[in-house]
Image (cartoon, rainbow, N blue to C red):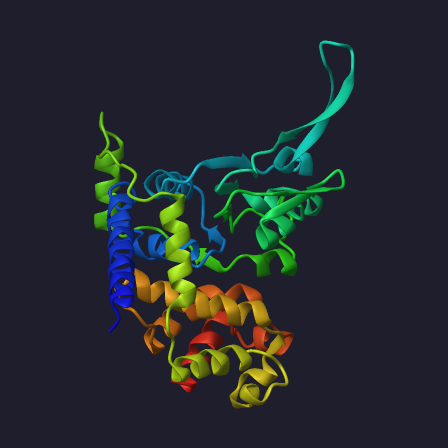
Length: 330
């Protein structure tokens, strides 16, 4: 093996080790949510965005704050409300008068100009305001007053959504959901974790956390993920699973053709490929396997498809269908 290859491998192992150290550091603040934390880090390593869905009080905001601190990312938080306007997120131009009496427009950046944006309760804002994030999430840029303004890189959105309150909310449109690489379901912690949470968070002091990585380290890790080798068998496995969840495809003939109203698009295939690689890196492996595909299929694909009325009347849901597809093609 060439010397440069040895150096590159050492650097990949070093970055992977630091990412795992970052996960352990965040774990000092977030208890009983190991899968949620892992999925959030996979979204960042993949260069994507994540939607965290869970009832209030489960630590979603706390998780994002801890990630920002440990990963060394400058962050902003926006509380989405029905009266929130696109300019409140993106920024706006204001007319100013200088000392000589001249007038000119000056652009004031909105909170989206950061590396980690927390969109809290994103489904409480109107569709117009929700759509303000579409270009930012896809192109890492925003267009305001006829000018395209780039956002800092890397740029990530971690949004939260309350699944139980429907009054005063606006469902996320399919185009918006498709921009989220992962949907992460945040469930209640078990009894031991809740005991630890109560003891740790109601005392005088909490366990300190510190920065492990910075934005350059994260960007480098994202480049490693994209260059990570992946076997043809794993690529075919990804294609089989994703394509089987589209009505009318050859791969769907096993079951899904009669259950899916609309299925996963090309962005889903790309997301599953990246998330599979990122999970392997997070677990200290230099190449992903079928187990990584199985672990990432549900959070990547579940929010990108809908079942037809017949399937819903039988009590089926997308998660069950995805699990069946993974087993069928394994």
